[in-house]
Image (cartoon, rainbow, N blue to C red; front, side):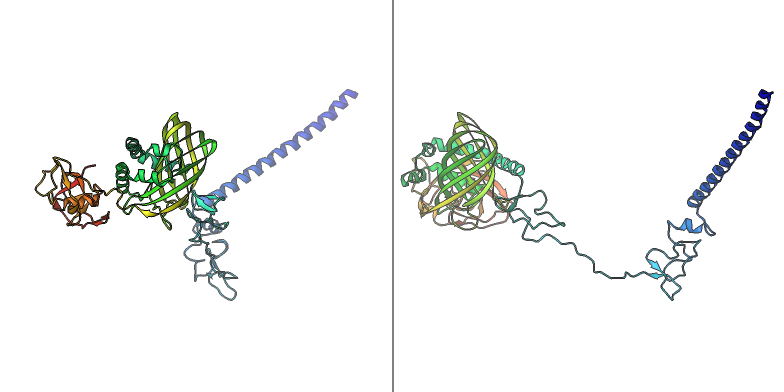
Length: 459
């Protein structure tokens, strides 16, 4: 009996629990269906345009007020049409019934962004003061604290200098060969004092030096340096150089120069030899002189013998020139270099250093007045210009001369001979559309238009 009663009680309790659980499940089911229906209605209100009614404000919220209300000069929309009633930047002022533009409480003037001053931050200028609106140096320029200037990075200078040297390497190499052939190189390879007057006179007596000056002038350089020096390095190093700086046009001003340089980079070894340099600046005092500070890069490879050189720039970014060294040593160089050059001008000029009278070699006839009827186009001819023929006559053109120009006067302008006269070789050319005017070696030529025949001097 106890067992039966207990089981009966148990059956009465279990059905009650089951009913409670079933009710809870039905309630949760209704809540889920109701939530899904509300979400669907809200999504439909956002997706489907509603022209009017309680859901119109939801549809217009993202797009702005409708055309009928909420715009400037119109009444504000009802809350169920558009919230907040007036469009962006509009509001209803106290005592008014239409939407009008909203004015700021404090009307502040527009803030003008500061610009970089014109006297700082560019290449060669001082860095600008720190500012949140611009950097101290423009673009990829870097601030050099040692000179307090903005300049290109070491990598950029090495690239530019290497390219500049590569363009002139062949000319510098050929020039050194000429210096060897006419015994100029030994003057700078023996390590003795280069400032002696006797060595200067020996240098000025060499015809190859005069020829180098004329060719350098044609390439646009104002000064050529001939010197000797050397140095040592291992990751960092130093070099020294001394010699003569000669301007490429009369009166051939001469200065002694002394250069010291420090460098860093892929550099190791040492060597010494002759230096030849081509420079854009003049060798006197004042603006545009090669005297002063600069930087660049050296590229060299020597095993007992060989050569190398570099390209040079001022700290203002302007191209200064190129140079090359030929001599003995064991060395490898790809380095950034800073240098400073000091000039000591000599009081005397050497206007006639390469203008000594030349005797007329046997078998060479005097030059005709002009080349109009002398040579056919493409042919060359050699003749002698006496000193008297170099002093007068009209000349048209520069490098290319009209065929009716005075040959001997043009030869002075071209630098083929000095005022003492000499032997020249000219090549007849086709005519040109124009001939420019220029002043060289004390001779000023005239410009002209088209002419049917011209000539040049053979180098």
